Length: 458
Ligand SMILES: [Zn+2]
Image (cartoon, rainbow, N blue to C red; front, side):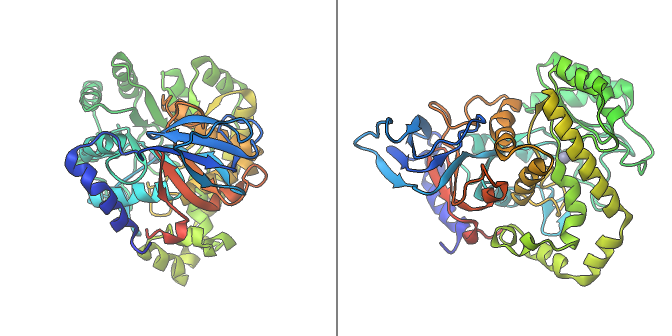
């Protein structure tokens, strides 16, 4: 397979032309012989069968007792391991291209490329948590219907930022004005939310942070209260960017439903844990976000792996190879801060997980060039286990729990009736999480959409 993109366009062209129903493989397929991790957290099932029809799982169980329909096409996956397609609760699309970021990258071609990359790396559903242009609506409809290649796409529309405040301009170049609202008054904030809801945003995103004091203002209480109130009145949930514990408490008290990053300034306390549980609020740690700030200048061994290399666009690869960039990145004070942020974030994840707080899965991949789609998610799993979760616990967060956060009942676990989104691995990640990188194939809506990442061109 030389050209991934071409193959996809050939496969999808007839369907696009005929406005067909969701793109699914015809007939019945049985995946036989693999070890199965179903996303529910239990021990893997050895020697399984998964029967798929019309994009959905018809039956799943032990090979010894699960009937394979006579008409089924059988795929032998002996020695492989199946996991549900991963789901990101916090990523971005159309913000980055190569080593560049900012306005102008929210194009169909660029986002399509990113969605294909997510999917090839086993992330079959992505929530683009803010900074989306008007094109989101079309792309989301197309991806939901399975008419475009790549991961399914959900979105938090533009998002609500702060004049002269968060989010900071990206790389000195702000995203387009149609990708972010910065209301000055509570009424403007309500209006912005109404517009987003009218465009059917999946979630409303806001930022409560001054980025380590680097920005002169934070979102004012009357603004975030107006945003949350207006969104809730219209039945839409609110996800909040935070960094510090006090901001996290403040915004959850004000009614936010999803804390979109981990708390990184200090250990979480009993008050925060109680608040999160009382409100049934979700917490998305995004551990790999801060790691991305420093790790590539340290040249860890895994950067040499094809799994990593195939996710990196040429301009970014050139940056990684540039000794001046490496030296500068290592010397920057933010490298040390980011290292500490990862450690605090990990400690807090473990505390919140053990306390029974609802935890989702996200990375902020796609928000900056260093937060690489696909790579970020597999690093996130590794960092979660480093924080003290077992591989199966981490995988359950990235599948069943991440689907539950998004309110998606049709995916996240491998069970009858669910969408057949799954990743076929050469290795068993239940004993070593790094084996999620041994991707042999990805199936999306009951159809094999890619093989090993060696064939992927970013
Ligand atoms: Zn983000």
